[in-house]
Every structure is written in structure tokens, then in C-alpha cells.
Image 1 (cartoon, rainbow, N blue to C red):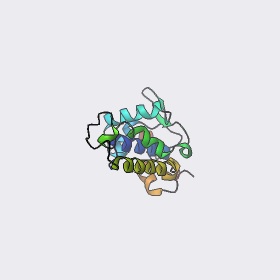
Image 2 (cartoon, rainbow, N blue to C red; image 1 turned 45 degrees about the horizontal axis):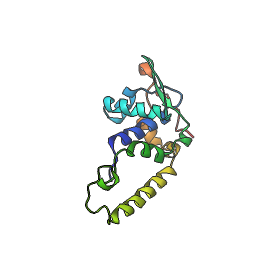
Image 3 (cartoon, helix red, strand yellow; image 1 turned 30 degrees about the vertical axis):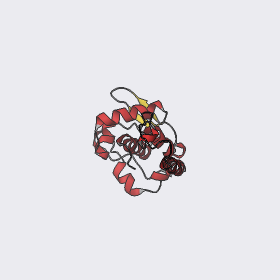
Image 4 (tube, one colour; image 1 turned 90 degrees about the horizontal axis):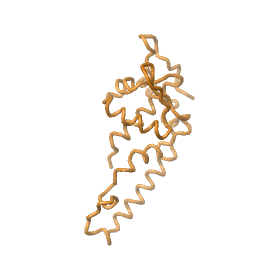
Length: 157
């Protein structure tokens, strides 16, 4: 199993916003600290905002913040949101042309495994990923505008 780039970017974006509470994070900030494309990020940020996971402010001084506290953002929900449109295997999609579909028990086993995967991720919150994670903070804490010291004052508790 391999996660889509969008899911990976969504989690990086959410972690960056969570590590910088009380400030607007910009797309360029995430692109820089996570070494990713701003074009890909734009699509992910829009989707996160539509689902209420991010709150956005438009304009020159705009950016985004978390749309909910980190303790309320479930990793499983984020993964389901971004992974649900990509079928895990051909037999999970609408265009299933597998000749084994009527008798193959692998589909059921894969379905059970995916359910277990998402159930486990649903027990993890964004807060679980960032609290007491000083190394992550050192990577994602953004410098204040105009060259001042970083705004983060410690890992959120």
C-alpha cells in the first residue's frame, strides 16, 4: 500500500499549521519547510478548507490556520477524505473487469484489512503527532515575518 501524494501533503500541511498556533501559515511556508510543490499544495489546502480542517484568509496577508483544535482532527478522517476516491484494487472500483470478481475471496480480505487500517488511524489525532515532538517542532516552526525569531514557543501541550 502506498499513500497518495495528496494525503501526504495534507498531513504535512495540518502538522505545520498545528505547530504554529496563533499565526497564519502560508502555502509558501509549507512548501519551503516540507520541500513540496506549491501547485500541489494549493489543491490540498482547498480540499482541507472545504472540509473545515483549515480556516483560510484570502489576500496578500492571507494564509490558513487549523479549522479545529488538533485534539479533534482524526488522522483516519483525513486519510479517508484523501484516499477514498482512489480504489485500492481494481475490484474496488466501478470499472471492475476482473474475471475473478464473483468468486475471489481476496477482495473481502483486502476490505477487512483496509477497515482495520482506517480504524487504527481513527484512534490517532493530530495532537498525538505533534505533542512532545521537539524534533518535528524544530522542522516545522516557522520564522516570524521579516526575519524575526520563530513564533513557536514550545510544543503545544
